[in-house]
Length: 127
Image 1 (cartoon, rainbow, N blue to C red):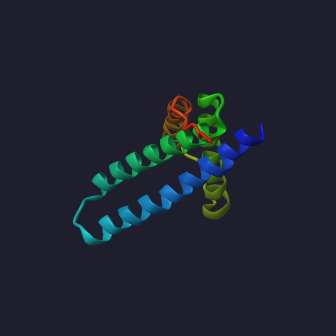
Image 2: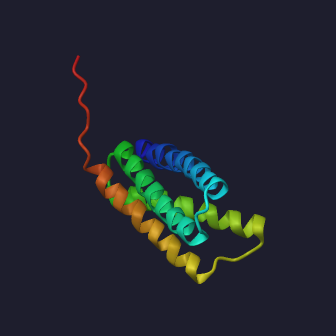
Image 3: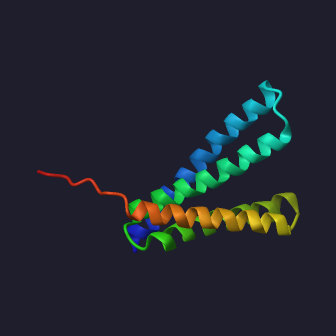
């Protein structure tokens, strides 16, 4: 249980936060220094979010070493709940229906990442 929780909260959420900072920096640079329209940037942001959650679920399941889909789903659910709480507390707005479909896609991506991560080969250490 400890290894699973460490995979979800440590490796999964940690890698999601690091990748979100990286993708935010890249997307803000594209917005500032290029003439890209906002529709293209919105699509890039959607791809960045999905790939970030997929990688977070992958890392959580790889390090948690059991029930990949559940580990990925738990990682995604933890992230989505944090985002919802942030929006309600700091922006004083409830979650809209389009956001719920986006969050559903994020949960599916994290769960898929967990399925992939649990099936990755492990390194064996020989002494």
